[in-house]
Amino acid sequence: MAGVDLSEGVLLLVDKPLEWTSFDVVNKLRYALKVKKIGHAGTLDPLATGLLLIGVGKFTKKLNELQGLDKVYEGIFEIGKTTPSYDLETSFDSEADISGVSLEQVLAAAKHLTGPQDQIPPAFSAIRIKGERAYHKARNNETVKLDPRPVIIHEFDVPKFENGEVHFRIRCSKGTYIRSIARDLGNELGVGAYLKKLRRTEIGEYHVKDAQLLEDVITEYRSADS
Image 1 (tube, one colour):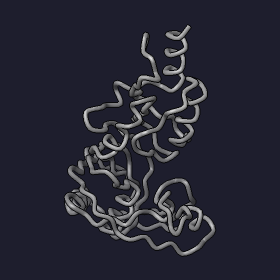
Image 2 (cartoon, rainbow, N blue to C red; image 1 turned 180 degrees about the horizontal axis):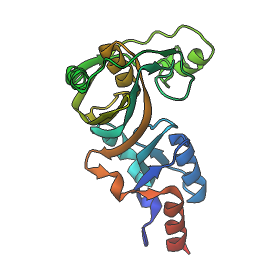
Image 3 (cartoon, rainbow, N blue to C red; image 1 turned 90 degrees about the horizontal axis):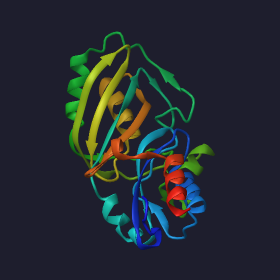
């Protein structure tokens, strides 16, 4: 980053920390780097880690283009349990016997969920309903009805299935909710499922192996600016 004029535009690859919102990361960089024009290309939930593309200065104009790129996620679905949010943001609300679920059934379900899908987003999402975020309604125990949205699951690989944990690698289109895939996988298997762990590894040609930790980005910039 040395010698780069942030006002002229730069793309930062950040490895988002656990429990930070994407906005938290942008806000931290806004004040630490003392820039006004800054944004991100593709939200990550607080309980997810991984690649976050941050556009600074004139590069913010390219964020819409970057948001449209395919994304790759790795993580773990746990079958036999469900939560209202489809992840660990909320408490478990059901549990089922998974002793009869085989790897072959998991692979068949993953195959069925590969390709074009009409996916229903989670009620606990940032989608607006008449100006209000869906998750606000969900947290207030209000009924949330969201229309299905077309997405494409290009790849749904299951490298390991052990003790009810489905380790996955998914490449998907813009707008795909991995938490909704957890729900749909659980429905396919008839035992329920939730998203236990999630990490975004790729956005288009960009890879998390080339990303920096948030504090390292700030330190490097301040060193270059001093």
